[in-house]
Length: 254
Image (cartoon, rainbow, N blue to C red):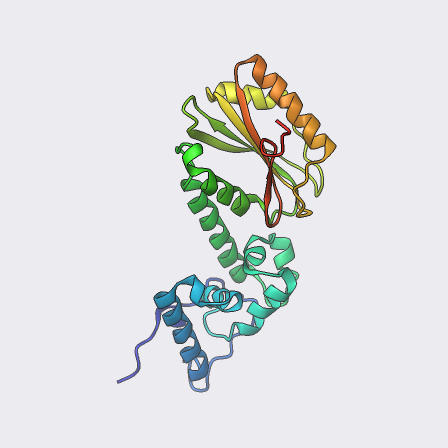
């Protein structure tokens, strides 16, 4: 009796032109035993111990199995980590930067972007339609997940109702590596359209340092002044860095 086949080992490639040539074993498409056994061991460790049971390069390998089903993924996993630094940075990297790594094509890039999108949606689901006060840590986690590894600045607004329940989270502008254009009138206009009673501003610093610039402080003061005229409260402005965030409220800037 032939040994059972594992789904990811028998699955055809997602794309006809995989980025790395397939090297099947002699006489057919069966994976060499050392690759098959390695994949089985990784899956078993993941299923029994979760993500904490695997270092970054093995977790990345596990993900890459789906993109290129019939090849040793350890070399590519290590190349990606050497290029970007850690698992989060790999998954969050732009398609253009991912393609700079030898061995990355449409299949690998698609798998990584699916994981990134899933992470964003999961983090967002933990804060949307919930009171910000009771889910503050989840809110910070979401902002880190969505923005910490972006290569350009993005400005988002979190809109809250009278009970401080998060009713909407919207990107308002995207900019360059060190600047994003923000128009206070548009911020307040959108708050009125959503019938929001309060706001939390969020933007990222691609440099990794969340220290606010003079322009950040001035823009925040302008939005606060415009919002107050219409009875809208500005609760905070969060600046997201690579490993930490800065709160205007906590720093006495609001």
